[in-house]
Image 1 (cartoon, rainbow, N blue to C red):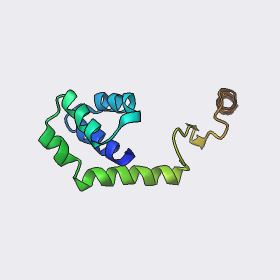
Image 2: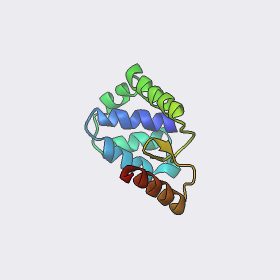
Image 3: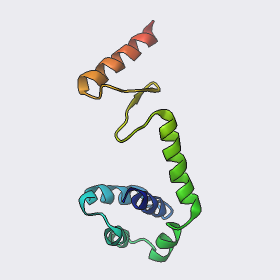
Length: 110
């Protein structure tokens, strides 16, 4: 449901409701299907004809596929992926992330 959810969120964005839709997607991630996505759109008061039409536009799919390609180029293999100063965080524990941030901060003060 990732692609369908992304298309739906971008379609909601065309009506100024991206973040509201985004929040509802995450609140309902265990039960997402086509029906649930439409239910969320109706709940948010979206113009359903526009919402459904927008999801079929090639521009939105191209935007998503471009973002996926950019992520792959940057080394993103899944979510979440974290970066500090453009470097991928490999040790994603609190301690590993803290160490990487401290190392980068130390470089700045040199």
